[in-house]
Image 1 (cartoon, rainbow, N blue to C red):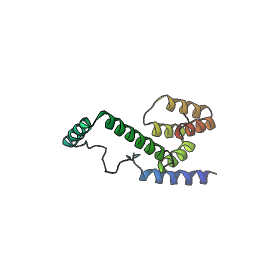
Image 2: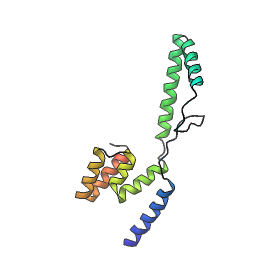
Image 3: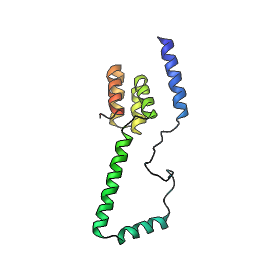
Image 4: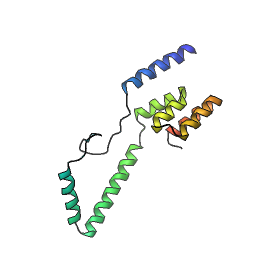
Length: 136
């Protein structure tokens, strides 16, 4: 039993080592880095173009953008990513750490996971899985 836990923890550590930070992919056709801002001239041109449209065309453009955002959001939730799989494995081993990595901060969900894990291990695992998989 100890040997299996040791092997599982080593494998998860190796997998987590390759993913130093959790990346977020943007649903865009042009690559955008997280630290760069758009060109101010391009923004001004886009705003001027939008303002030159009629009221009916503006509403149609806004409606199409909302539909694209909704489609992109549903595509993101369609298949769990590798990060989710790693968080589920980590939730079984260390539930509070998995909740912290998922939330990105120490908040009430982290403290609940920590308390449940310290008191009773299994409820801590269940709570962490619920938080990570989107139930809470």
